[in-house]
Image 1 (tube, rainbow, N blue to C red):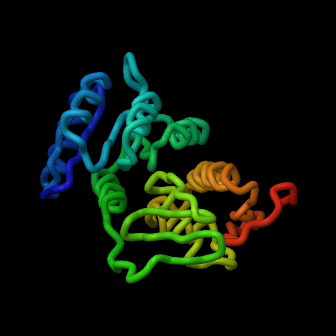
Image 2: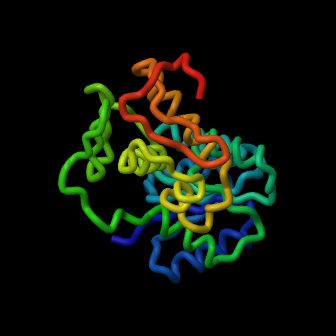
Length: 232
C-alpha cells in the first residue's frame, strides 16, 4: 500500500502543486484548503504524514499540529513564509517534526517527506539495553527504570541515536543529519526544542538528567543520569 499524505493549505495552487508532485512519486494524496475540513479527513482517512501551512484563516498550522498531536504521532511538516527562529520553535513546540520555508523546491520537500517516512534500513535483532533504558527500535518502545515512556517518533529517533553512542559527544550537525536528514544540518533550533522536550519527559520520571550539553559542540547521553541539581 502506498504511503498516505495529507496536505493542508488555504492556497489551492499550493495544494495542486503538492498533490501532483507527491502523486508522481507514488504517494496516496488528499488535500484540504480548510483546517477544520482537514481534521475531519484526518479522522476518516488516517495519513502516514501531514504537510500543513502555518498561516491559515480560522485555525493556524500550530493549532492543527496540536490537534493532531493530541491523537496521533504521525510526522507533521509545516510550511511557512516565515523564516524566523521564533516561528520555527513555536511550530516544533506544538508537535511539528519539520519546518520548510516558502518558497521551496519540490525536490527538497520530497526529500524531507522520504526522510520522515523512511524505515531504518537495518532491523534491530535485539532491544538496546543501556543504563536505565531499554529501547526497542522495531516496536518504537522505550522503558526507563522499567517504566514505559511515551515519546513522539522524532523524540524516539533522537534518543535512540544518542543511546547508540552513549557516553560520546555527538555534534549538532551529526545529530541533525542522522535524525532529520542532511537538508536540516544547519537548523539547530530543532535540537534545542526536541532535546528540551526529551529532558522534561525523562527527568519527570526519575529526577535525573540524561542528556548533557557540550557548549558549542553538541550533546552527550549519560544513560545512568546525573543529579538534576548539577549544572550542565
